Image (cartoon, rainbow, N blue to C red):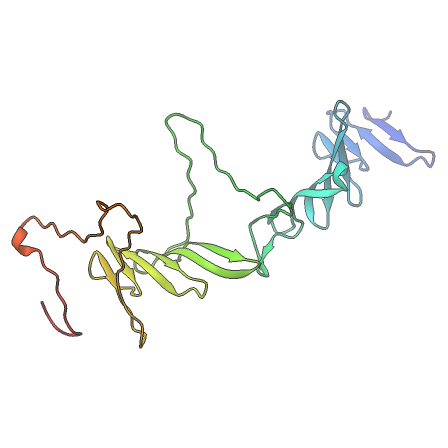
Length: 239
């Protein structure tokens, strides 16, 4: 003891732990800045469950901050790196070579890797909200082994919702209540456009039922019956 502090020293008379008169405890430091201050190269705090035999380590390393599963071969379960990126199941939160704010990684033979958002309140809903800066698109991308397969995004410049294929070619475009297939400027409720030579732009209705009463039909039901029509025209023609 000394100076209203309590010290623990080793055989070399080096202070290994200090309890300050204000209640802060320092391990590896004599200047505890918080209630428990541990200072070391790659400091580790181990939490051991003596009932079930599970051990977890809290670590500060070159990865930043990590939670390590001791009983699973020191597997890193959670990491916050020095840039604030978060990895669950990985120590390198990246995607396609780019830094990723949250990276969830699974390597299971029979279990899926799932991100679940759950709300159990009777008057509330579970939501996923994607908010980009002004005039920037927001998107959900689908990949297979790092290769692009599809994407859903909002075209911020047009206030439209777009579905693309693996080449990120716009295939379905929803804007102002109109749906475009093959066009980003749908002028009707359903606008199908093909500009590829030899390609047939068509709408196919197919019923595989063998029941004689199951039909395939296109129904026209305007408020004014005389306004119902099917029009075939050439490019540039008018109704």
